Image 1: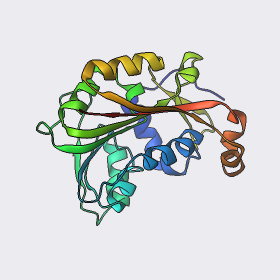
Image 2: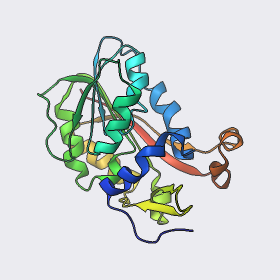
Image 3: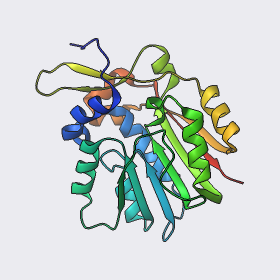
Image 4: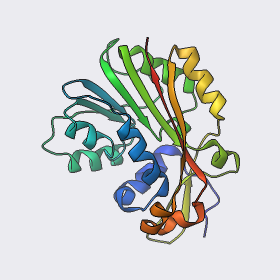
Length: 226
């Protein structure tokens, strides 16, 4: 059963946090391999995980040898991330987007914005801030729920284990062209953009992926700062 009312973003992710990593979300399954393949050689480099959630990108960034700063607006998601990554030298900060990022100009070689932008109303401000804190020659990686899905009314959502109901989180629809135009206005140069399609192999592992086989469920792009 679907609860019709969209949860506010912070409330929704607070509710999702306790089981986010075990939820079997097919979007994450198709997004993570692409984003991680785009990390590039980051050993010893400063990296920002912007909207880190439970640390699903933070951990592989740290394992790749990067010096990682991770920020998120949700206390509950950050608590999960801190617990999972205890012992790793991560700089954790709670920060509500799209307020100015708490870093000086040209701090990072890489900024990762994983499944965050569709919850931020001021996309231009977000990408401008990402640009500001990135060094010349650095890159930004962004992923989102595919615009095909949001155009049809799909939202970030989870199954509440207490009730079995599907809960939706407020999600903003934007076209790929709008994402690209916003990045261009910020000064980013497009390196690659890609639709993320659910495969039969993913569906064989995650039952929730079965209805999406062959469908563009996510979208990702990487940009460079000249």
